[in-house]
Length: 148
Image (tube, rainbow, N blue to C red; front, side):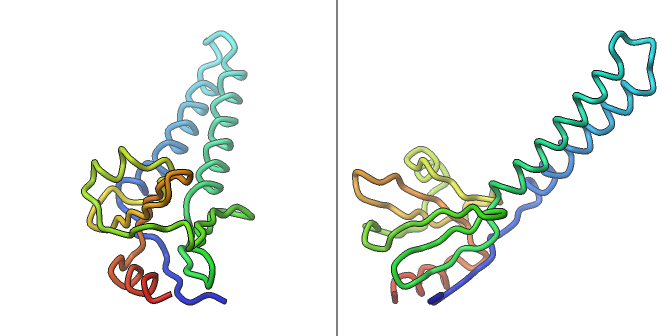
C-alpha cells in the first residue's frame, strides 16, 4: 500500500545537462558526417551517435521518477523496471541537510535538482548507506514519513 507519493523536484541545471549533452553529440556526429575529408569520418559520426543513444538510455534508467512511502519502505522509482528500496526499520533519522554534509556522507544520491532546499537526508544504520532525495515538497514528504 502506498501512503504517500511525490515526484522529484526537477532542476533547470539537470534539464539542461540531459538535453545539451545528447544534442552536442548529435551535432558532432553530423559534423563528422558532413566532412568526409576527415579520416574515418563515418566511423566518428557513428561513434558519436552511439554515445548519444547510450547517454539517453543511461539518463532514462537512473533518473528518479517517483518517491513513494509504503508500509515497510521508502521506494525510489527509477526509469523502467529499476527501483531502490529503503526499509523503514533501517532509518535512524530524517533531516534537511546542508548541501555539503549530505553530499559527503551519502553514497546514494537520487537528486534531479541542484537546489539544497529540496534535499532530504535519510540517515541509516552503520551497515546501510545514507540516502539523499529531493521531492517537490520536502516538508510534506518528511511529515508523512514520520507518520508512517
